[in-house]
Length: 114
Length: 114
Image 1 (cartoon, rainbow over the protein chains, first blue to last red):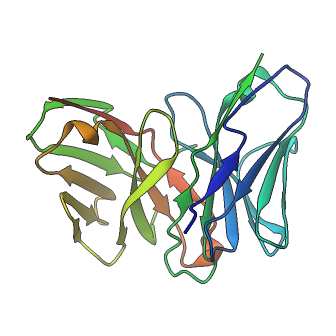
Image 2 (spheres, rainbow over the protein chains, first blue to last red; image 1 turned 180 degrees about the vertical axis):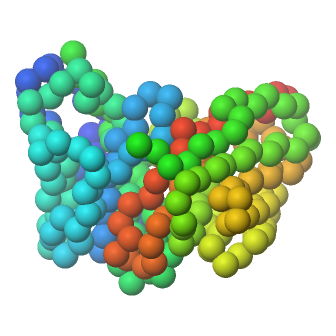
């Protein structure tokens, strides 16, 4: 049973560019959440997707957008990259009907903006 | 902003000793979860404790929750070098799939020396 997978593992971009990160949820999960983790900090919630719609959003600008596909996989897009966007981006999947929202995390994508 | 705050920020112990990490939070919660992160990679779910529970065990892990003090503790008994990692507490505010996000603290960096 495959867990949460993310691609790519590492990514280097320059300021102003756009990036797309991908996530495949754990088998049987229908909800995907994205988190940003800066160095030395805890993860911060970006947004959550369920039924192909953004259900909740954290305190992130509109440059951060996402998408969920019918197979429950998801993408995170970041436009007009800033140096401060350099971070580990984590995807987590869960089951919407799960009572206590136990989230399973992928290995993350390390984004470096130069 | 982050709701949880772990204490201490860093902890160094010898193999075989017990490690205790504390987490404080600000608002009422539905549940509290502890995660482990090795070397800035993905988060591994350790244990979930519900707001109506006071103590929970899983192998060498013991978690307590005091909702009146808005605090939790994670005890790792008979620590091993492989327990070296960062440990995060995360709070979930509401029930079920609609709760969306987890709110993480900044973590405790545990180092277990052989």
